Length: 222
Ligand code: C5P
Image (cartoon, rainbow, N blue to C red; front, side, top):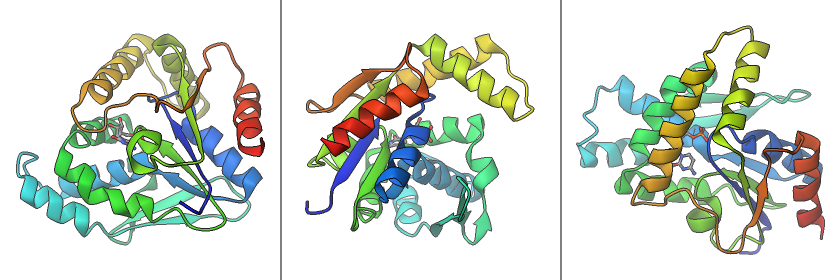
C-alpha cells in the first residue's frame, strides 16, 4: 500500500473518533469513520423494511448504498447524506448504533462494504477508525493503534457527552448498552473486535484526550 494509513480500532465510546479527527487534521490526511458506513447501512435497511435474514437483499443494498460525506470548513462537523438526505443526527443515536452492530455481524454485508472503505486510502494519507481497520480492511497499514478503556469509564464519558448536548442519561443503562455492544462486536465470527498483532495498544482509562493524542501522534511521526 503506497498511501500511509493509520488505523484506530477499539470498542464503542473509547474516543476513537475524536483522536482520529485530530490526527487527520494534524497530518492533513483523509478520514474514514467506518462506523458511520455501518450505521448508514443499518438506516437504509431499516427504511426499506428488509428482514435481516434476507442476505441477498442486504448485499444488494450494501453494494448500491448511496452515501456521501460532507466536511465543513472551519468546523469539526461532518454531515452524512443517505439517498441525498442529511442523516447526521439520527446516525449518532444509540438505537442506530445497536442496529448497526447487529447487522455488522453478517459476513456478506462486511464483504460488500469492504472496497468502499478501502477506496478512502488516497494521497496524502488516511486515518481510519472502526473495529477491524487494522485486522482486515487495512491489514497492511503502516501505523496501527488499538484504544481501550474500562466499560465503566466509557459509560461515564458517554454520559458526560450526553449531558454536554443537553440530554439526559442513566449510567446503569448506558453501561449495560456499552457492555452488550462490546460482547456482540467481540464475539462475532466475521471480523471480531480485537487488536491487530502489530497494533500499539493504549489503555486510555487513566489518560486525558491530549495524552492519548500525543502518543498516537508520536507513533505517526516516528
Ligand atoms: O463506531 P460506531 O459506534 O459508529 O459503530 C457502530 C457499529 O458498527 C459497531 O458497534 C460495530 O458493530 C459496527 N462496526 C463494525 N466495523 C467497523 C465499524 C463499526 O463492525 N469497522
